[in-house]
Image 1 (spheres, rainbow, N blue to C red):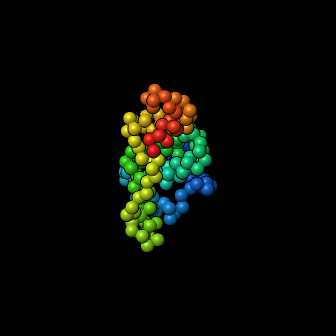
Image 2 (image 1 turned 90 degrees about the vertical axis):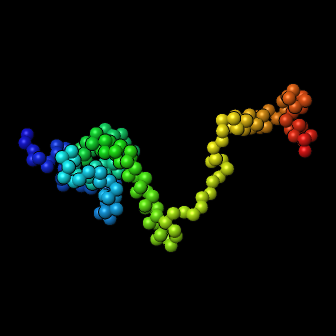
Image 3 (image 1 turned 30 degrees about the horizontal axis):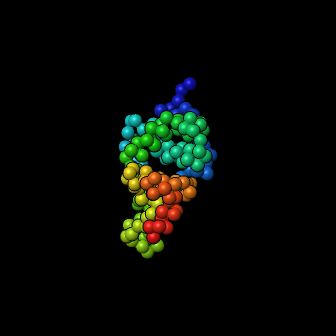
Length: 163
């Protein structure tokens, strides 16, 4: 079977679009972040937009890499380029800039000036974590157990005595 150099086996140039395909407006934003090599580079066998559409398809349907439809680039190509994009930080940069654009559209500063952290999100040291787990277990699961370290009183009685 003879194929033109620009035509890849399994890729249909006139394929019907998927709902997950990137729109022209979205693509104009994304293309600058995803272009790692020139369009005419010899190692680029598939259009960049087709590879990105394949990645969006996988994210949308939640399937395995090898389950890509035949009218999209091969899974190995999509996987390899996705790993490159992740390693270079393309998606992180895209998300950062998009957040800044959206904040400026709402008449806010591009970067947030403050952050709110919940007390449960702050990480503790292993020693503090072990102590917190111990305290939780002793307080909620063994409130009546008597301890020699507490002069043979239960933790609840010992706390009342200390207050």
